[in-house]
Length: 202
Image 1 (cartoon, rainbow, N blue to C red):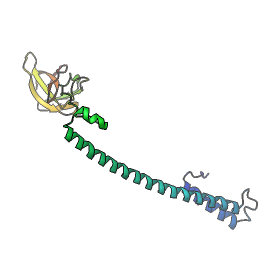
Image 2 (image 1 turned 60 degrees about the vertical axis):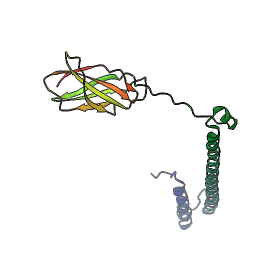
Image 3 (image 1 turned 30 degrees about the vertical axis):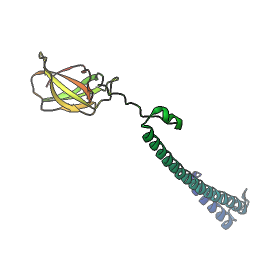
């Protein structure tokens, strides 16, 4: 069974087919509830309305373009005045408030990251280990993560990798030794508190 179309173009096309089919095969459809002429009138009314919508859409699109151009021109002139005002007042906040503007805000100093969280090692093999963790939920923005390792029983940590994401695979690791791995978040301001340690023999 055929499905009535939803797209306007297909509805319009089907209307043409129905109208011409009724006219060409009156012997098959002698008393339709709507005459071909009535369908033609409805189709003409729809076509005129659709054409009007297209014209109005084109006019609206043109108006939006004109508005955007005017806004851009306004923005450019405002920025020119504000830059001028900043220079002549040396970014004095009190003076710039007369124009609804303000001086430069002192940037907040960058803080070291917080503690790297939930270090895990879901996969490992001979000479390699996969680590994943969660980013700190406090402190400054993380720039990278430093992965460290120490031999079990030693207090000396060695840097063995760096990651930009919250996971890393370390290969070419010594085998048959117990190691503890940890991850430290870092940025230009310093280092965060190390994560929990993961004990592993590869």
